[in-house]
Image (tube, rainbow, N blue to C red):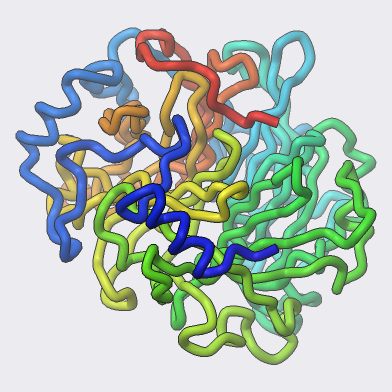
Length: 493
């Protein structure tokens, strides 16, 4: 039953101020020096942010002599894959443009990592595409796909192989409770464009344990065709939630409800009919029952909205993009809906930044959706960052995200200037974890690629992450326990 505006208004009135409080999931805010001003504003002075974060985290970042990754004292990294340097078992180079990644328990305490490769457009444009492994190709004209990387405990590389190939712009995705990876294509390109032989813009399932299960890759059409980012699974209720990174107009948050009698498991989704279940887009309203057209209008951490769900007319977007099938007032939009992660009985999701295409400008939001209450609450709000080349905690452009086993969140930065992995604690502080020191520009005009694919190993001892360009996967180890915060978050199925 959908949560009506009247239900939400009455509940808000009883609980006060329109903010619903429900334990640990409701207390994560942002750093005192990173809260956006009421009109979007600018991030505060570097000195204020620096003072706020000195009291937490792992300390100052130390410049890397190798020019790849700056880390705090006591931490170290290993390069697992490097495009143009490491090779697959079949002899080709590791594909480029690393993006979303998930970690699964491997043999003898090791880890299996499924890694997206965000390769858009014509295959001929990419020097290091995902190889067209026989039997594992969806569309031979597309360059993207996923590889599976096996590492030993602590992050030492063992081997890498193709999971699926011939997909396009594989950006984010999500791990499932049954031990597979759902990889999303961030494109709407159809057959005939860029040399493609098939339509794209789908979700594909990849099994890191069973290569045979990845043969003859098929899109999960029931989840819709649009510019997919991330996906999470609510195992208790059966829903899948998905983000869309698109503009003109801004993208949507979706919910897929399985058909009656459906039970999740390996290979079950790809066997569904294209119209199976129900795909819906979200529509939110405030404590007064007023419709909210765009999430950028929330300018205060703790803002809570009620959520309704609106049916998608044509999920395969045969003639009109899914997000364009709705008129103003039918659904809520947000710019650059990106990473998601299940934890605390719901999921966190990111709106990376908002500019002139949105009602209010900001440099990042992180929201939490509570499926039991059918509400979203703003947890992190980053002001517009004018110090993009600084290293003082003025972060911008949150993208891939994970819930840390040590409390709070770990976020991959995809903004302007310097790129970081940074954390947010449960009591509202931000702190740096790593900085990308690999300059792919020039000395006069430095350029640093985004971080992607942030995820912890199953034992919590290793943090994996990617530098998207040229394509480097690293394993970071160190005294994670030094961050003294409550455990018990994570992918809690």
